[in-house]
Amino acid sequence: MTALALSGLNVWFGDGPARVDAVRNASFTVAKGESFGLVGESGSGKSTILRALTGLAPSWSGAMSVNGKTLGHRRDRDFFKTVQMVFQDPYAALHPRHTVDQVLSETLKLHGFRDTETRILSLLDGVGLGPAFRFRYPHQLSGGQRQRVAIARALAPEPAILLLDEPTSALDVSVQAEILNLLMDLRDEHKLTFLMVSHNLAVVAHMCERIAVMQNGEIVEIMPVEAMRSMQVTHRYTADLLNDSINYVRSSPVDPSPSVERVDPD
Image (cartoon, rainbow, N blue to C red; front, side):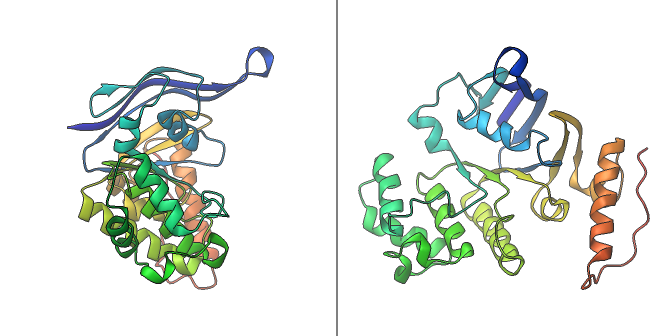
């Protein structure tokens, strides 16, 4: 079954001479239970696709559907019970004057849940935070703890699909792996579908089964992650991304990886 489908998606900002075409003719599907990655440089249109799906980018054409239901230009409560998003910056995503309890209880009440006490404790436990964090404010939490709260809030409506917009790029390297492993565990536990945006190919290789490579607003290649790992790429831009990633790892003073030959597209 297809969880997400995009066909000929175009997204733009502004009008006339000031118009910017951020996404052009993007098409892909994500199967139920799959983890699908969007990769590319900053400004390639990856995050814009997530914003179009959630209704945060209102100027678009083409077709989008969730679980077979075609999306219009407005999103209703049923959509947000099915689809939730985890943003890049966990501090900006949380209200600075709301405690963790307020953040979670507000979301639960908005979606019609009554047993908020039990659910808040269960959500905190599910993301590795105990009841001691319940009445803390965002400034009293580390970056990793804030992102765990943001993930708990996304899980509160019991969605089937999570949109992940660079969920670890704003975090210290020491906690990035913890959050990624948490997301993988939650995916297995809740049978979630992931659509993940990242510029980090290692993260995508760890998290996803298939990836779409974006350049200047267009999808230039879609492939299984195994093809990326084995350097079986067909587009020059994908090869350049892989080579840049390999060169970055090689230049790291703590690089433990074996040597890797340069990638050339077929």
